[in-house]
Image 1: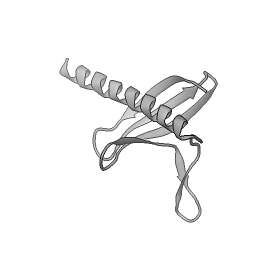
Image 2: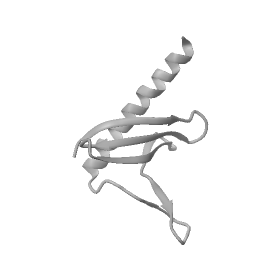
Image 3: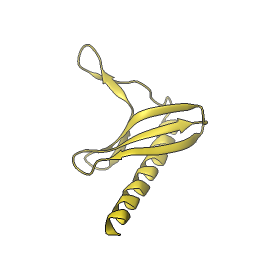
Image 4: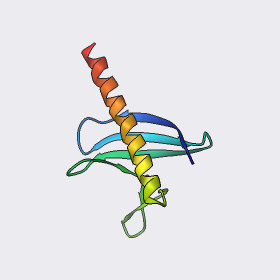
Length: 93
């Protein structure tokens, strides 16, 4: 499965939540509300989730293998960084 599109839907400069992303796979399957979060040591990608009846957040979708998770995280964070740079450059103009 290949990532065919990444759309940075929202950049959030304040707080730990830094961005909201949509990813399309094989021009056939889209996952919305992927989050870019500032962790203690680095940015990371959080899959869409919802709270279950006991109050615990559970991923709605998620990669099965570490290889898939790494690829998604690398590409999402790359798109996020480009969007941040474009936003900063637009502010300077």
